Image (tube, rainbow, N blue to C red; front, side, top):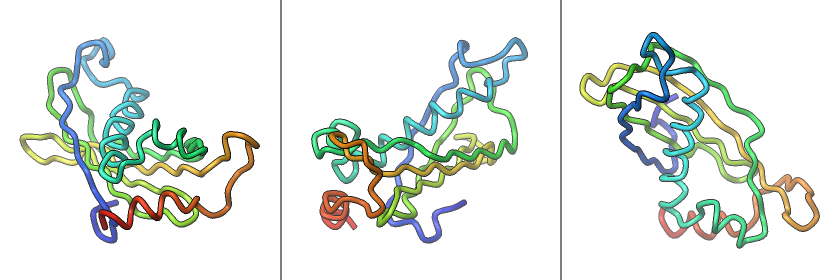
Length: 141
């Protein structure tokens, strides 16, 4: 999971707060999903298709698959960088992520999420991504 083949990328910096950690000051594994979400929203904003625009376009994009590989632990007060890479959009949104230590660039986590379009009115899964996403992406890539 890297930038190779990415159509678009974004990154965010996050300071690990105390409330995200377990008693050993290590980030609880479930909090990584939130870090991915922050980076994903930053990526979606680059082509004006964050969750508000998704809803306005008539589609929800639930995550149907999320895979995380924990390489090393993030800890309290550590500054991390979360890179998000858009890899696919024609039939689904596949975004790859790499979380690294901001100062050392040590790789901490790799992840992938997959989202699919669902018509808000009919609740029907769309087997091809709606035209709106292609239109928005083609303005920036």
